[in-house]
Image (cartoon, rainbow, N blue to C red; front, side, top):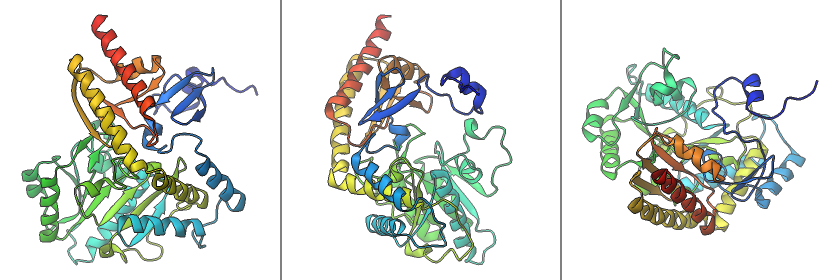
Length: 400
């Protein structure tokens, strides 16, 4: 059988229609750049939607993956494996927490955290303490529990009924927080910086009140660090910016250096919540993915990429502010390290399409927000190329 060409027509024939793909066939990547099958180079300002923290082709990462693959690609979690142990130690040291569970994706980490929270709450003896709350405009994933916490129409329409015992607190609304939490609450899930929600950060006042109410009602705080973690905001975990003191932390996206890997990290408060057989995964903590995770964290530390993310992020913020002074299409700019949202006066999809024509890859979120999540090691010159492309697009739009 002759293989189909790699194009949009073939894509429509082969796959369920759940991804609105770019009209690009990518063959490989180099640093902060992706290369298409016709040799065109594209500056990647979304890094696999926050996954490729080191960009493409980092030799340390490639060597870690190939070296571990030559030894052992997979063995079940019935066995102890050195890469798991080393990565676990590293993440526990970085977080100051007590125990870890490895899975494969962000949404799997969220599902595990929901189970842990409800099992922990069940120890209280109160059969009604099962409520799991999240914040409006959040995104926690697309499996049933995670989707139930996300509860946006675009993600949940047609998939009812959702997980029972879930609810939502208005983002940064302390009065609504005080109204919604109670003795029935098992956990509150937060994103300190909402990625899919348009790059909005939780307020210190909200976090302070949440922690007070945790003491009053005895529930867990679960920090979703899937997009904002691993150094993207200038600290390894974004919750460190507001001293959220979480009981559970969900980590994924860049953790495996591009391979499927996620983690749930727990405090001493929940350290013994799971017993043998309560939860599991066939592939979670895969030794190759864990080896990649070790290399990724070492590179972030050795190259001082958290500091770099803060510096380049601040530089891009300043340059975007200059654009905003000249282009009324820009309504707001929000930036936390290399997690940047630019609110515009129309659907941001238009700017995504225009940027692609200039060989720059950006994406849109929350309807009218341009989202930028470049590799943490992007250079100042590459960042400037993105700014120049956006400047040209806004200028051409006004002139046209």
